Length: 351
Length: 119
Image (cartoon, rainbow over the protein chains, first blue to last red):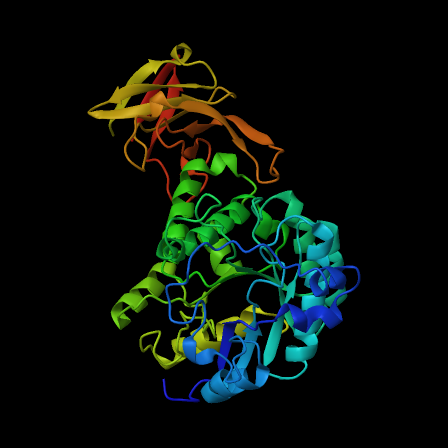
């Protein structure tokens, strides 16, 4: 794709906060625990990152040495201006957002609010191209709903980033969250966090974990579809972020096959699982496997539609996908859909 | 027109079914709770399982909710003995999860307490 040929809507950009950045948005006594007691969330990932600069692109480290993704002007220079983004959707980078924090409900809730305020003030209101995700600590569901009520109507918040826990999202526990999201025209976004893929634990090597990330997406989709969430909340959409996309035909076929055999168990389904998927679930492209044009088109054909895929870079992470190199050439109409129009059609609040 | 007596009416109770031979074909003769008879090819459209080894039952309804099943169509649904697929006896043997698929069917009439299958 020639530069600027299509104005890209990038569905996965990771802005990063340091703990000190969010202190001014944090209420007491929580501020005190971080400022004076050195509290940080427990770190889980057991690996020394086997890449050049940890989870980040080595060239995305801010020139003054700060962490990649922590400086808007450098992100503008390296990503938004350079590529010519039309819009980018911020999805954060784990803590200090409580996206994988368990326990201490009130601290997690306070962190989510502080993070949202920081995101709005430091990013969304400083660059017209950036749209955001509402962070919540769903372990305290009612507080999470209050947070959606508090910031969900911000014109630049387009989705709720729901943390993955050990209750799958089709469970009635989450339904009031979906109701609140629907009320504010927010979609639900799932970005993998720690460590949902391997029986709730980490495998021996990073490469195993990273290979199996889409299994977390498949579990959540299967649970939500067969528990009737998408019929109960017909305006709800689910964006499955950073799991790649080559698994999509597999889970569609598998769910449809199971439905043909086991409809009796889930009679509340009003539509075939793959039809629900096509209507209410979207999938970001990164990390894309290297497919030939023929393989890519065949995969789209297997999905039965080219409405599902939404391009994402995952900037500034190490497994970044280049808009000009990650996907094979495709016809201009399809390219327009995947690089911009599918995401625009999905997020009601994206102009 | 080929036709054949396959059983006596009292060989099959309402809500039951049995296999019978119709020429070289194996047919499934079903009797719904209202006493009516129906006949289909005794092979699942999916992988050919013998349907007479499954069961006649009812269906769960689409106004069910997770945790709260509602039932309907008692005695009108064939469930395959292998994968449990459901076929609607009174709707041309159509599959509930995919009504485009249906069991090949035969005509049936009753004369003098004999069940006659014909093409």
